[in-house]
Length: 215
Image (cartoon, helix red, strand yellow):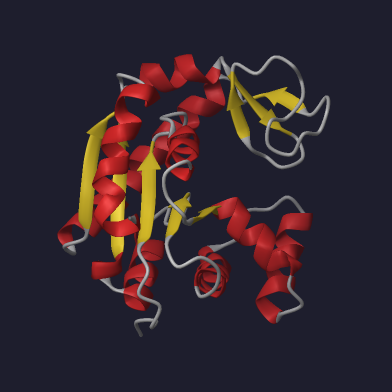
């Protein structure tokens, strides 16, 4: 089943702290699209008085990861509405989710921005990261304590320690790398970009790549 909406679905993928959220902030200044992280998708769906909404809400209230069998329908429900073009961060996370996305939208509507960087860069960046306890948005080098997104005061906490970051790097290699290669094998357009030079240097290049899709 390929849904009729003809907008582009762009996935931004990379290691934790590779700069996915920061790149999105730069792209928002140039293009009109819907941005959703996997957490955004699930929180939005959980608000709805639907069967899948109640199931997702139950997992989230218990602080449990939502299984793929529920994440996929939740993502589908969310992607069917809203903005024509969308940028996704955190979905798909594995090959099964990738298959589901392709089955429902087709490879010609999907493009992937693959951020490449060293493990050490991700670890170094983590020391400058703060996350809002309320809206969950991440910000760099914000020491004021006030979230720049939801404006809540005394809301920022330090992101996870090195051990957790290293665990996420292992998960990236175990799940995300095979997923990217699966997309590549299926003929999905993938833009690989080294982001070691930083956001200011690489954001314009990513924006130019997305111009035919979002412009």
